[in-house]
Length: 133
Image 1 (cartoon, helix red, strand yellow):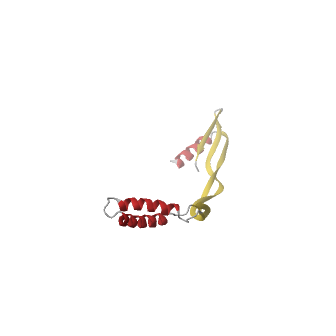
Image 2 (cartoon, helix red, strand yellow; image 1 turned 30 degrees about the horizontal axis):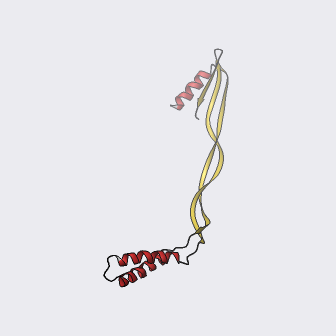
Image 3 (tube, rainbow, N blue to C red; image 1 turned 135 degrees about the vertical axis):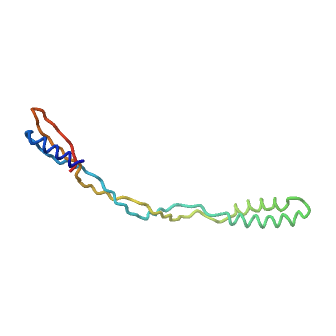
């Protein structure tokens, strides 16, 4: 189709005056991906769950032995032991490093062909036509 169009333009412009063909370029950005590892230091709280669990187990055992025939004595002892274990824990906040892999892009600007424009005059009228080579 484009060869027919170019042929028609060539035939038409043989009788036309002052024909010019101009190539039009455009700039495009080409992104090239690459990966980097990014690390950050954050402060994390100490884990007190182990101390809480030990306190709950010990409190449950003590609660069962102290209240031999009373219902839920072990459960009450476990709750109280868990609270005491959590409060007496020596776990402290400390810095920790967290790393993730990020994709970043390097950009390159290139000039590439966009289209062409032919300008000509025929019978006193000026014409302009865009086409692809």
